Image (tube, rainbow, N blue to C red; front, side, top):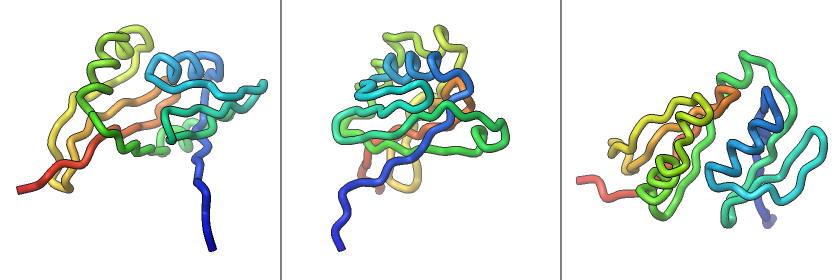
Length: 121
C-alpha cells in the first residue's frame, strides 16, 4: 500500500488576506478557486479553505520541517510579516525534542511551528 502525500485543510477567516499572507511567508499559490487554494513550498503543500470557526481555527497547529530554519526566519523578518499582518511570531529556539524552531501564528489564529532537526546533546 503506497501513499503519495497527505495535505491538511487550513482554515482562513479572510481568504484573500490569508492567501497574501502565505505568499509573503514563502508559499506559492499553485491553484485557487473562490473558496479553496492549493499552496506549495518545495515539496510541502496544504489546502487553504475559506472556512472559519474560531474554536476550530485557534486549535489548528501545523508543523513544517525545513532545511534551514534561520533562512526562513530571516525571510519573515525581511518581509516584516509580524508588522504587516499584525501576527505573532516567536524567534527560533532549540527545543529538547531535537529541533530548532520558531512559532508563527497566521491571521486566522492557526499556529505554525517551522523548524529543522538538530543534534541534541
